[in-house]
Image 1 (cartoon, helix red, strand yellow):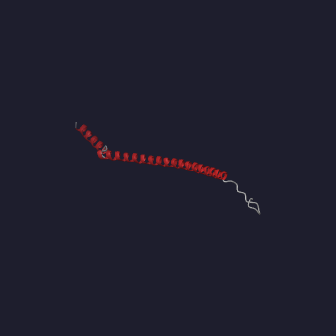
Image 2 (cartoon, helix red, strand yellow):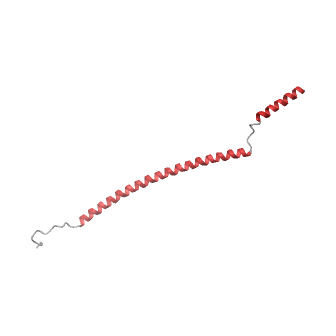
Image 3 (cartoon, helix red, strand yellow):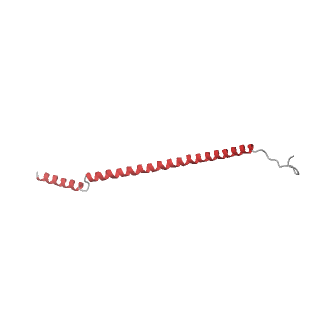
Amino acid sequence: MGLTSKFAGITMLGDASRHAGHKPPGKAERAQAKAERAQKKAAEAQAMRAEAEAKVAKEQDAVLAQALHEDEAQRRADISEVAEKEAEAIPEWRPDPPGGHGE
């Protein structure tokens, strides 16, 4: 029995020394790891939001540019139309013949 208990004691010491540096994580370590994962997820979400906002801003810029282009084209068409109507409304003026006042 002496040899068996000596062997058991050595085995137990060996197991203890092997696991001394590899303790299972405690509450603090688990909480720290959870916090780090949450921070990583938050950073990823923030990056996705920034990307989405940039995409929306780019699309809004394109829509505004198109609308401005269409407005400018319509403005020019309106000006041209007004100019034509004004030209039609003004009678042609012919100068009086030389030497007379049209009498």
